[in-house]
Image (cartoon, rainbow, N blue to C red; front, side, top):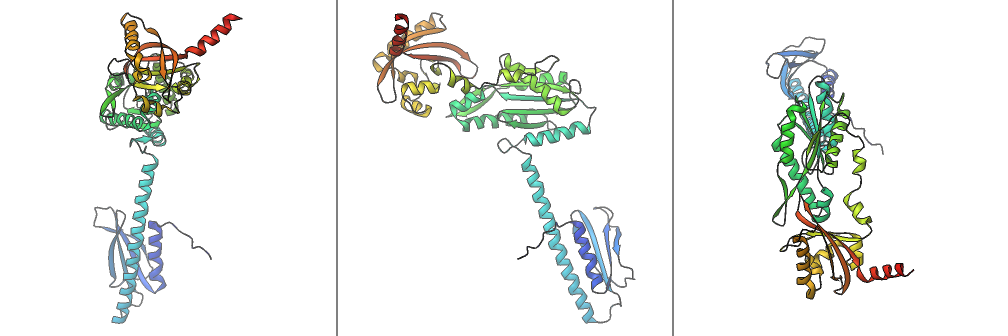
Length: 420
């Protein structure tokens, strides 16, 4: 069975259909359209060679244009039967035009919707990388002598947010950041999400000196996401550069902004920096190791928890700790300990161990060393040496990084070593 070929419905195919039908049935015709959508004056577009006497006319619309179709028999109007026939033909053609016009308008509407979807990030409802690059390129090419400032920004330690709170809450942080960008920057600013937690901004008619205060203010603007009824702050790093001062095209402009972004990350994050000559293009390579990559390959078992006497919430445990203590994954650890470091300590030692930790910290020591019995997933305990360090985290306040060593295993290994 042959499949009928599908041809696109266009204004031209509609007019061609209209031109052929009257000639095939022996009629003179004339097709006109208005000079402009707001005009009442019609201009002839197509017409037959013969005279048109006492024509029947029909006015219709295709897209934004008004059209008029006039038709009469080549031999003139002779009787009522002929008039009925021509009216029937006329109505058939009118119906065909209406159907074709409707199909054309629906196809046009769907095409526009798909084009918008292809350029929009579904999570944040701003441009995706494809849409941003396309429109940024057009804006710069259209105004090559205009100054533009491009900025690249991302969330500091975003991997940490995903690992601790889960990807759903990481998505909330991304959406909240995009919403704050829409609110903060002017309507002519081009906003996009490159992917992951990296966002981009293009500010037209702007130099880097003029953008500096605005971008610094946005960087310092409080940002947070909600987790179980509590607001958790997060921070961003931002780098920016100016066209045409440091770049001759869009691609080079974004590379300069990228170099500035990773320079600020090498200097402590949570800041804003403008591109300048001499910034290292290889800054990304120095930050190429993600938190999880490092944590899973350190030679030891460790956890991170909040340094708070009343709220010692567990944040993270690497695979070596989970393996050593028998927990199948971090979710089981959180569930069985109720996310509390205190519940990893044998009950009869809890008060003494906590007092010892805080006594060392209160005496000004950043590091503490504690020997206690740690709870395993099956409810049994084993002896460990806890080496902890307290640090100040911009996201979570004071936190403990704690490295664990199996006390018995450590004694066996070291005794064997020194016995040789």
